[in-house]
Image (cartoon, rainbow, N blue to C red; front, side, top):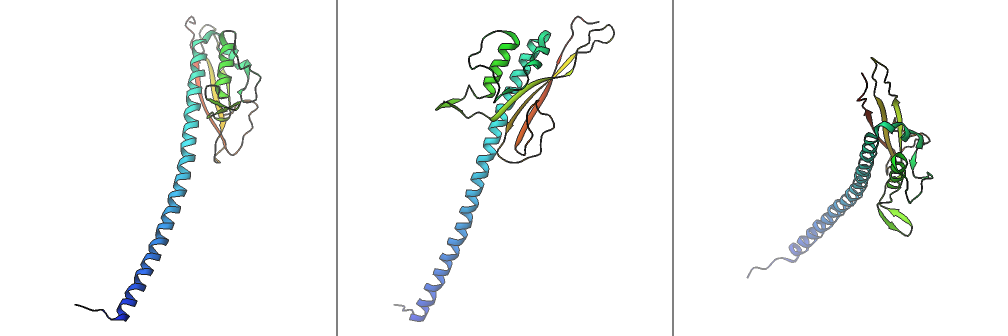
Amino acid sequence: MFMMRPSALHRRGGFTLIEVLVTVVILAFGLLGMASLESKMQLTEMASYQRGQAVGLLADMMQRVSVNGPNAASYVAYGTLGTGDTQPTNCAGSGSALDACEWSNALKGAAEHNSGGSNVGAMVDAKGCVTQVQPENTAAGVCQPGIYRVTVTWQGNASTVTPALLCPGVTAGPKLRSISSEVAIGLPTCS
């Protein structure tokens, strides 16, 4: 039978303890890095979700303006809709009045889960507007279509560059997000 000297046992045990301590320190740094990555992933996921909501709302209003082309200018009169506006929660009417009311409620998150009187899951401080970029001109030889810009703004979780296109009355801030697109209303009877 082979016997180890006591000094060899002692040295071997001390080396193992140092290895264990180094391993624990490496694991601790790795776990801290993973925790940091997880929090950043959650912020990115929320920003992506909010942008997806904004794109859907933008497309919805662009379609409404396009379908109601002859009355597209009436959408401009409603100003900035969404958080803080005076639109009712129960929409009535027709045409642009109904569209404005329904879009306002969608911006406020009315389609999202309601928890204790608050809409949960909607964009933060969402607002939207329709502005006229170019008035239509049906004069002979001109035939200029009306162009309308639909804009949606909301507050993100992290600071970014201030958007260039905002709705009237929306205050620019470091976390403000904005998307816009334009709708051209054709002139089928113009020559």
